Amino acid sequence: MLTHNFAVYGAKILGELAGSVAYFPFWWYSRGLAALMSRLKRFVINQEKSLAFFVWLKNIHRPMYGQYDWQGRVISFFIRLAQVIIRGLIMVFWLFFALAVCLFWIILPFFIFYEIYFQIT
Image (tube, rainbow, N blue to C red; front, side, top):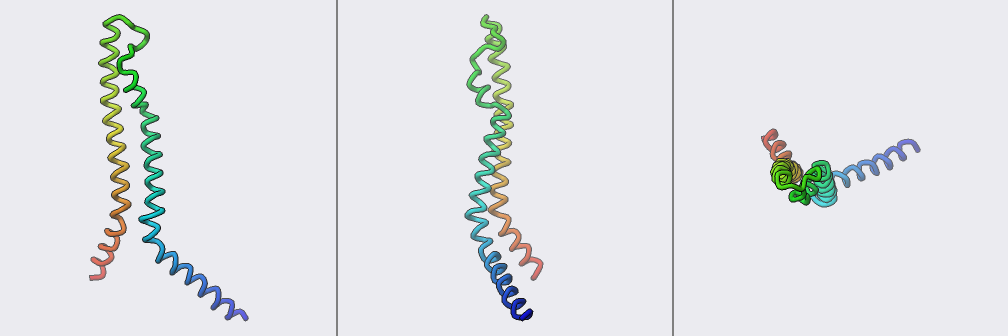
């Protein structure tokens, strides 16, 4: 009885393992990629919120500290313009980082198979 259970459950475990290994490439490029894209989208949105880029861009013509004279407006505009440029460059960096992670996700299995093939030959 013990060997029968061992054989049956061993076969079930090996079947599940083989199914998981066979399903992995399909998961990697379908559900896994969709989950990664969702996380990267959330990451970029959170980076924009932490930088408050659109808030600075929306208020670029509004004077800072209630200085409505022409000097206050000029100084506020150039300070906010510098902030928008710097924060925009940081946002572009995070966008390129997210794109690089996505490309790395897509290319990684091909690179691994190439390296395995290279080691075998």
